[in-house]
Image 1 (tube, helix red, strand yellow):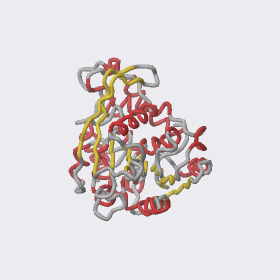
Image 2: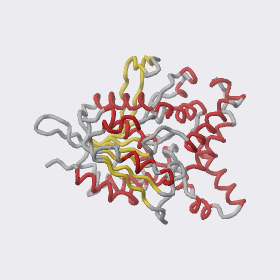
Image 3: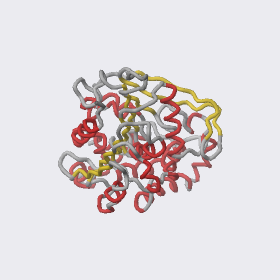
Image 4: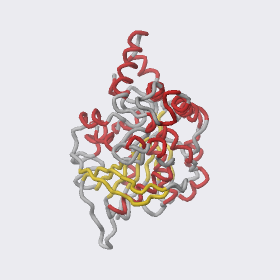
Amino acid sequence: MIRIALLLLGCALQSVCMAQGSGPRPVEGDVVVKNFRFTSNEVLPELRLHYRTLGKLERDAKGQARNAVLIMHGTGGSGAQFLRADFADRLFRAGGLLDATKYFIVLPDGIGHGKSSKPSDGLRAKFPRYGYVDMIQAQHRLLQELKVDHLRLVMGTSMGGMHTWLWGELYPQYMDALMPLASLPGQISGRNRVWRRVVIDAIRNDPLWQQGNYKEQPPSVRTAQEMLFLMGSNPVLRQQQMPTLQRSDEVLDEYVAEALKTTDANDILYQVSASQDYAPAPGLEKIRAPLVAINFADDLINPPELQILERETKRVPGGKAIVVPFSAETAGHGTHTLAKVWEQHLAALLQQTERR
């Protein structure tokens, strides 16, 4: 039961994700960018960008990288979430669509996430206010340091899906293909904004938050985790997992107790607030690489009734929108990490964009 809860927005409980995955072991490293300037004009003297890679980088006759794949995680997660069995054992295995013996796979920890620089490292509320554009520019710097000048594929889940849209706009010649999962190409609004505001307001209005200078984690962190749990799955699955009042409380309390072991109030506040600059709609026509956007009919965060995905994807040259129907195999928003549900669409995209 807790397995599905961990799929939420990014599988923030990294140790659990790592334990479940049995795919190829990654190489981990850090890149330190000196005097990184954020879009807010704030400067961080040293920005640490943590990453994991699998496979070896290959180049074509012109010296350009030809087999690099960038995969970006969701809010509160890290690159470790893609090492879980549901993802790595299907995609990165020998013979898989992203076979790590053929591809060079880059799994970065975004700013404010995982082992990259974040408020809880020491700066707390003095950490620069970062947005999605900052996170993508930092990823671009990371790839430059790794000598990756071109990407075979850019893909991501949830927040990483939103980053995928922006990657296509900001660096339109950088990739062969794009696949955003569990995201919409429009500004955060409506119910999607409401649940984020609940998390943000709960922390900021908590007297024990103390403007970020707390000595112990404020109680509002529990509210934040409960909201993440609520948004992450579909009602049918939740009812199966939690058929009685008592069992509902037990499952929720179990999830929250585990999450609180690694959650920091400032980190989660920054993570949820980072979507404030996400507004890809005006620039969708800038995207040049073929794009396949995949959402799920039982996704509470990106409900299909809005029709935003279908409408806006039509503006992308070579864009295609797919909404996977509800089934016994889907798990709401968290389906983005269940590769067996959507890997056939990835296979088609890779075949379509294969270099001849």
